[in-house]
Length: 114
Length: 125
Image (tube, rainbow over all chains, first blue to last red; front, side, top):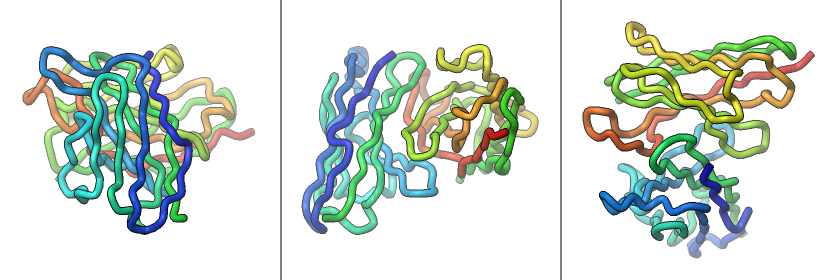
């Protein structure tokens, strides 16, 4: 199975500052035939289901604010929140959906306000 | 707008079974993969298995093989997850989730853009 390791496990960022979360995969999730990275990012707030933010590693889901961006390729990926807002306090997960199941998630990164 | 509505909270004794439902409304059902993902208290997300209703059968994570059954009823646009031989470690919130693209758009897997509200299953003697 593909293992996703997120870092850090938690971070505290001042309002308006940048937050960066890394996700490292044990196997490349880049599909050579279409040059797409099969990696997504989700935001989860307490008591709610996860919400899709980013898919194909860098494509923002409809309705997601443009302060959220995804980057990376192959095995190393980053989620960036360019200017942290109070409503961004949540746990963030990366997930791979490369090739065939099982799909796996990173362990999560908790983002708080400093 | 597609919605997934799950059945309510359940309490079960160790060794018993539970079956959780996930009803889809407002869009196409049969050609989209639906997965089940669980989250133990204070823990992360764990994929259990998934099914494309028009194709079947389901794929399962190795960890749950033999203990879980995922099915779908196209006539009622409802997916089900049954977990057997329950133990206390199965106490969790169980989510159903639909992939954002279906079989008629691509044969490739995709991310989960629609989630059910979650069903808390408590296993306790």
